[in-house]
Amino acid sequence: MSLIKIENASLGYEGKTVVNDISVDIKEKDYICIVGENGSGKTTLMKALLGLLKPLSGSITYGDGLRQNEIGYLPQSSDIQRDFPASVSEVVLSGCLNKKHTFFYSKEQKKTAAENMKLTGIYDLRKKCFRELSGGQRQRVMLARALCATHKLLILDEPVTGLDPMAMADMYALIKKLNESGITIIMVSHDVNSAVSNASKILHLAKNWYFYGTAHQYLHSDAGKRFILSDCPCDECQHRVHGGAKNV
Image 1 (cartoon, rainbow, N blue to C red):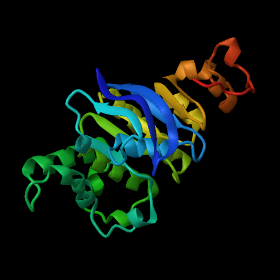
Image 2 (image 1 turned 90 degrees about the vertical axis):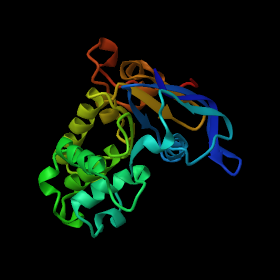
Image 3 (image 1 turned 120 degrees about the horizontal axis):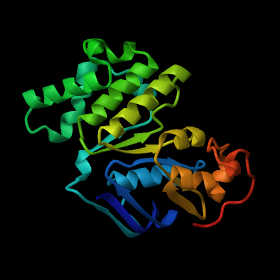
Image 4 (image 1 turned 180 degrees about the vertical axis):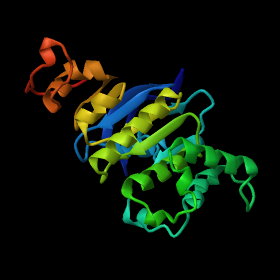
């Protein structure tokens, strides 16, 4: 079943198109990586998926009862986030704000926050100050926060940026685990090789074209052959192939 369907959508600002005539069907349990060079429209598309930007043309529709305020979002790490003067538990609980109807968090919301802290491996850190944590720990806190908003779909914006290799591997493993539990993942990434290794589908955005398909299809596409050194075991993918990507 489709969670989000993008049909012939053009996206941009003040009438200027950044992403042109894109059609993508995002289904339950997909793990999609959005890749592309700077300026290709990754952030623009992400804003549109979150409902922060209306298409210039075409449509973006939500299915399976999904509402925009039920999408978990993990933004890029920033200096402001690093300096949060709050405990881990308080930061994670703030992910329930869209569901908060009083001045206080409900028992159910506190239970959800605790479960998500356990799921992301930070429950023992719940009383620590957020700004005292390592980069990898902070990202796990922000991921737990995003999970408090959803049980269907996570949108992750460069979730491993700035992490050391071990923390990066741990974060990728955790995201994979969440996907296998039934959560649909849409992740913006600058690392094409890691995207292909971890995701089930790739959306590659460029100025005048885009590719959308399985990771294996991407390996064999003009875009894949141009931008990555494939780990695919077939003979065709055992060497880098240089060439121009075609319109898709």
